[in-house]
Length: 307
Image (cartoon, rainbow, N blue to C red; front, side, top):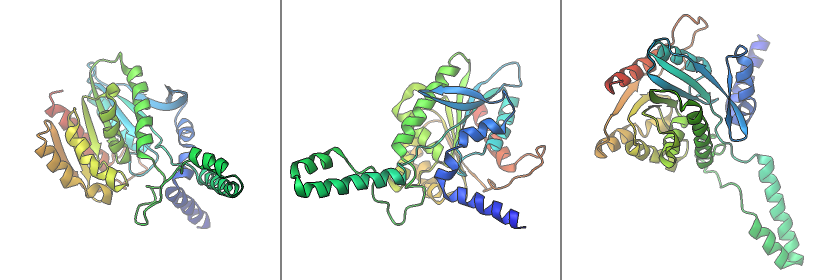
């Protein structure tokens, strides 16, 4: 009993400390699958793992890229593989691409920056010109966190994360450029919002359609801009909203739908799904209801597009 309680507390600690769950994410992926199942993708100077699943029909529909992050706002790897199974049965070649959201500077880096500023102020008492140069060359690396912001806001940098995702998407595009067919992207939570921003800034990987599941970002200004990103996206968008997954996402559900209508966006559909993300079963033969809903809506969406 004590071991179970200790294990639960450790898992909760990882959930409340993004930096703790962040560092070994790619390593855990490599260790969690059979040898040869995980492949390597070169992204700049980094090597990231990907999992490819071949289509199960003679004629391939194209490539479906499922973006996965190490937090509950996105698919877990097991859910991604389950969804990939549904899509591969319909002729899709599926690429599961894990992604690490970009972290803010560590507290130790912030502390060292503050120490440097204090030393410059002390030095300024003796040599004002030297202090002026020191203060001019160093800028604060972080802004003050609003008291009512979520704990995620102070850990993630939206712009840097968008740039990092763009780099990974370009690497995926280079790998898949010889694969014929449509390009479908599936992303949930913060990754869905990041993808919308990345695709609006760089057209190197513009999909034929996006399945955005409860897109949100835990920062007010960025979160409000998601409706504009959805409405102005140059590709069809299936907007799946999971009721109760996130208050941030719930606050923009109506806004996203109305903005798409007022912008006369073609090929936009919003579907409200019940909250079943926490449903799981140790029996691998039993399908997850949540993934079944996502798969059915995704396949129905591709049929609507004529694919």
